[in-house]
Amino acid sequence: MKIQNKSQSKSKVPKEGLFPEIIRDNYQGSRKLLDKKAVISGGDSGIGQAVAVHFAREGADVAIIYKESDDDAKETQKLVEKEGRKCLLIKGDLTLKTFRTKCVDKVKKAWLDIDILVNNAGIHTSKNSLVKISDEQIQETFDTNIISLISFTRNFLPLMKKGGRIICTTSVTAYRGSDHLIDYAATKGAILSFIRSLAGNLAEKKILVNGIAPGPIWTPLVKEAFDNLSTFGKDTPLKRAGQPSEVAPAYVFLASEDASYITGEVIHINGGDFVGG
Image 1 (cartoon, rainbow, N blue to C red):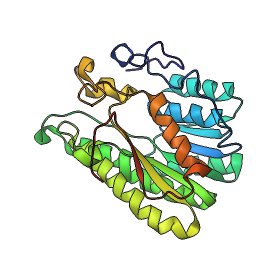
Image 2 (image 1 turned 60 degrees about the horizontal axis):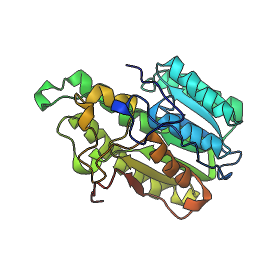
Image 3 (image 1 turned 90 degrees about the vertical axis):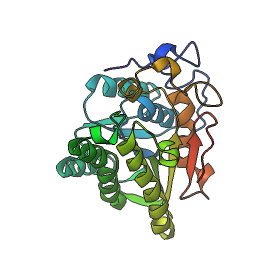
Image 4 (image 1 turned 45 degrees about the vertical axis):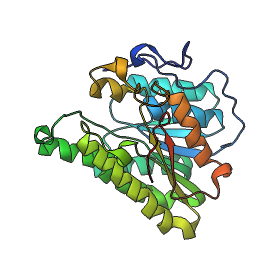
């Protein structure tokens, strides 16, 4: 189900999440990522789209990796180019080794190297019982959310130099679990361990690895996973779900020089839902 994306929003809380805010009208770019080159998986909609547009407003060119929605990808490209930056679109299935290789080849041909890699692609399917989760669903969720993420990062590492940044999207479910997204939460926990492990591994090379753990955020995945959108995010201390525009600035921070002494860490953006770790 396609959700229309709007770059502006009349309200901080859109009606039933139909019109997520991608970037605030008053967000002022300050050249934090001037002339940087960023690759963003799952960059065609939701948080990924917001990250792409924020990066562009901060001066970066972006390459968007997406699976299906040409309309969403072209809208992202339009928003990036509106900021005066270049946007490379690469369509395909990240679970396929041949496609991951194709991504690296296309980016290398266009840019030679990259400064930022954002691992944001992910899927989830809501099931309220473990016995209802098929082997096929488990395999697809792990292939998409963590197995391809590890391989994708490995393949892009030769294109990264000293000062490079890797940012992975994990989730609040990695810390507190989820009774209806069991396999998804497990992959997000794996991403958390990957962040911490790779951060130590790449510290000597001066490549920083960090993560973002969103809570309830209005994205296209929300409509597929929650039956009652009127209650989505209402159990947080702020009593509402967040906007992509409220998450993306944290990616800008981690990608910028402001975060030069941070690695192996995760920023929690969840409306005050306190979690350990």
